[in-house]
Amino acid sequence: MFFSYTMSVILLSLSMYGFWCFLHDAWKWWLEPRLVPVPSCSFLVVVRNLDEDVEDLFRYLLWKIENSDIDCDVVVLDMSSNDFTTAILERLANESDILSVVVVPAGQRVLGEAVPLCRGKVVHMLDLSHRMSTDEFMVTVCALLGDRHEVLVRRVAK
Image 1: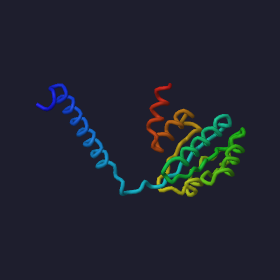
Image 2: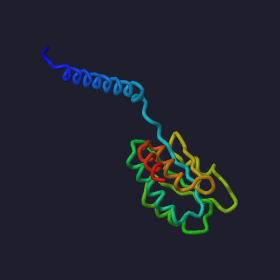
Image 3: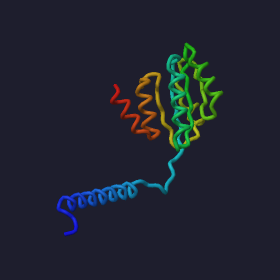
Image 4: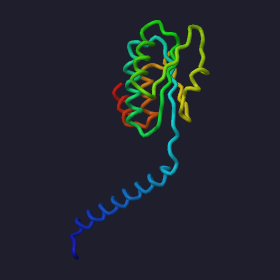
């Protein structure tokens, strides 16, 4: 006997764990399609009267896009806001190449004007004027741009 019984059990356990790690990594590699590139995407965001939150939300969205591997652009459809939302969005559009703003007159709900401005092959439409809260917007951006860890952290923090 070269090793004691305890040492043999430890070595066998470590070898089984190493084999399991190898199989796990091979399985992940097999399931992840790396040959097909991710298509470009566009975010079409509908806003109205969000002057308190709009700068933080869109700076965060632009930061996430810049730090991701996906080619994205953002088109904002401003539904004739009565506050400083339009001015803030136009200032952000001047600072960034991937952000464009379309202002729609009151009473009209025209998505057709903004869709041709989207450069991506996939268009994600997010409605901050009626359907989504700002927290839901942040979670959606994290989920769409592939940062699952941050989504889980934000959910647990609530």
